[in-house]
Image (cartoon, rainbow, N blue to C red; front, side, top):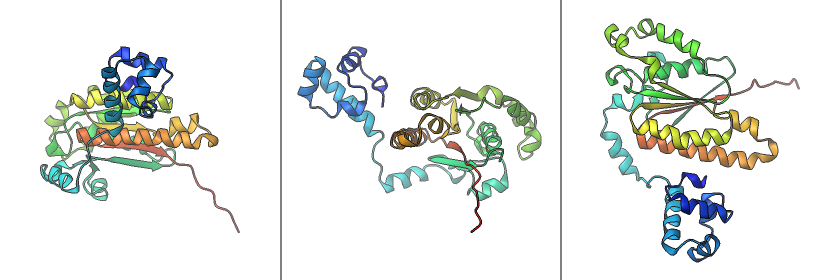
Length: 267
């Protein structure tokens, strides 16, 4: 994790960087006395540094099974999932996307993954009584440009596709103004986006759905086979951040992953 993500005085962060400590984990490898000697910081500053670093890596509090059950019971069953707007797909998924956790949508190129993600970006904006969360969506593109034309086509068809919703409700939703698009072409930009920009939108209630299209794209291009360990660490960090956001803000996360066509060989 980057040191800039710590909630500390810039003076402290600058001193740590000057000591050539580049990651949060590196800070915790040293004792308080060693950090004072390396950075030239005072004892109180070092304590603030250690507290911030440990809290950042620890993430959210440890939850018991009882706590999770009690938290679930606070919400009616119909508010536990985000409807896809299609009874058949909702039936296959037990009602839709779970509000807490990451859902992976994998398939070959042109299988309709992005189309389904765009439909979810519209479905989340409907009121809860119609399967939505009455909020917007964050759409993070990592490979291709955002398919704005396809989105416009879907928006124009919502009255027909969502015949279960009264027309006045559909017409009252400003679909296009509640989808926030980010582009992240490399792994660092993607990690920064989900660590800094996405939490702001979720915390303000502007969005309740996060889509990453596609999740493996930056890692596949940036890391070769010899850097598999580094790629695994980055993916683990990304997954942990997305899970934490989903749990904290009760917002579903959809990660799209493209898979290649397997080859069969005759014996």
